[in-house]
Image: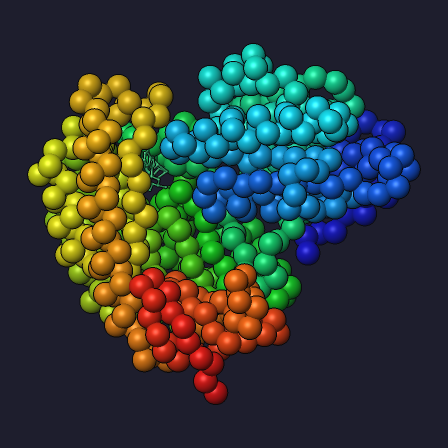
Length: 482
Ligand code: 5AD
Ligand code: SF4
């Protein structure tokens, strides 16, 4: 779908071009030679498996990495017992790191019996110097390690690691570069993530993201629009605009533009039927955006608006730059302008110094806002963040008890919110055949609720009207209506 580059026409005996993305296509052509040798030796194409940890940003990055691998000639595999395995890592909470260490142990055992296998690591966790030290010390079987800023150089790095023994490591501290027009292998035909910006400038005191993803950089609107036009021509009906803080999109461009204006322009693209975006920081959510949402036919009736805590005191400690009252008045404005909007959120329990009173404020907010769904997290200490240096970390048993109480409340309210939809007929984008029951298909409402209904594969990618017959807490059973 991108400017197709014919790798066979590239002269790999010449010097590599210095400009991007031509340089990466040159290295893809070089890697292809390696793949040809592999096929001659083994009588089959090499299999590549990418495992994605973490957020939608990583999921999109993995599609780009797979696009490059497929272009080179690898065959996509879901099985980690493959010739090339890449872990695209997350480090937002400690347990994300632990998963990777655990899986590497398993891969090591497999590689001992399959020594030709190549193992690569990339993503946020690789931006932490302690991780790199540990890899060098104890995981010598890993072949390639790169970070978040040089992901566009994957083909070049892969070529280096295929040609030599030992571990190739390339980690950058930051970058202001955005490389366009590399290949992408989309997971779904009918929907796609679209990066609109990279990095984060907010430095919430608990969060490691600004340290591992660098400063905010927005893509140019014309590049984004062109990408979405091409996606639409390729059959995509829903786009999810991705950024750590989409509400500050465009502020640092040479010709500044607001996120609301970008949405207006995307709305005009024919073929695109649904627009979603994440994540919205409450402090930057503008009146203009609310207005655009109100008037839009395509922007989904769903907003993910991370609260993090209901206590203004804790919010200040978190450096969130809004308080409880401000958040509530924002919710009021949104509900007034877009009455059928579904709100979802992220909440952290057990931030250092959180008292029972602070926690009760969070519980109160959950009740007052009435979220359709909420992701709840136990605070995880991330080395290098200001919150990690605080003395008053909360004991584990206290946090766990609060977490359980919060989860119960979130689920109770979400079920109540969902049940209000029962009996309604809503447009649903059908996404897949149900894993458990093949006579059903699964889709999403504009509000992001999931619905299962009798159907067949041909319905995938279509928006159909569905009567929501039975509410099962956070999902529905329904039936297509004409
Ligand atoms: N501990 C727990 N949760 C965290 N998040 C970010 N950093 C941490 C942390 N140190 C959560 C926030 C954010 C979501 C993506 O992850 O709620 O919105
Ligand atoms: Fe982390 Fe805050 Fe940036 Fe979100 S806005 S990525 S929570 S620092």
